Image (cartoon, rainbow, N blue to C red; front, side):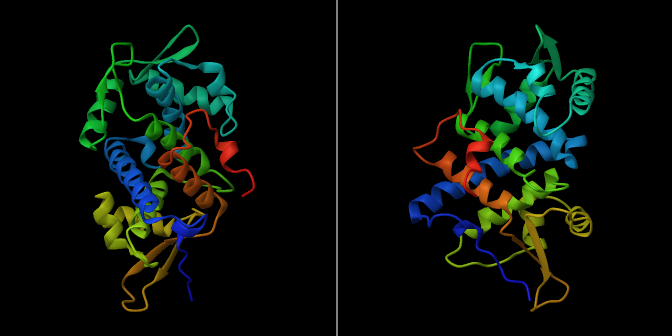
Length: 259
C-alpha cells in the first residue's frame, strides 16, 4: 500500500504564514513555467536543455550581465560537448549570440520571456539596459536552483516531471492534512492533455514522484512526492526564496549540505 508523504513537512514545520508565502512563490513560478513549457520544443522533454537556458537567463535578468561561455562548458551537470551543441542550436534559432566570450540575448528571446512573465502575473518592470526588463530576483534564482536540484541522484529528470512536482507541492501546501493529487487535477493545473500525463506516468524514471491507483476508483491514478533527497533540497530552496534570509548568491551545493 502506498504511503503518502506530506512533502511540505519534510523539513522544519512551517507556520501558517510561511506556508502561505511558500505556496504563493510556487504558484507564481508554476504559472511562468507552464507558459514556457507550452511555448517550448526541445525543453518539453529535456530538463538539462532547459537548465542550460535558465542558467544564462538568470545571469541576464538577476545579475544584469552576459554569462561566460567557459562557465557553461565547465558546469558540473553536463559535459562541454552537450553545452556546445545546445549553444549552437540556440544561436541558429536566433535566441542567443556570443559577445566577448559571453552568452547574450538575441532576437526575440527577451521579448518572449517578458511576455510570458507578464502573462504569468509576475511583477515585471522595465530596465534601461541591454536586458530590457526584470522580475523578482528571488524567482530568477529559484528557477535555476530547482532545475539543478532535480538532478540530485536522479537518472532522468524531465521538465514535465519538475512541473508535476511543483503542482503537487502547491496542492499539499493548500491542505491542512496530506491528500494525493489525481491525474485529472494535474492535467487541469498544468493545462496539458491527458495523454501528456500518461506518457510521463508510463515512462516515469523520476525518483521524486510516486504514483499509485486510487483505492476508491481503479481508473484514477494518484500522485505524490517521495522522500528523495532532491525533493528535500527543492523544498529547502523554496523556503529560502520565500524567507527574509534570502540572498541571491546562495548556491545549490549550500542547499544540500546536511541532507
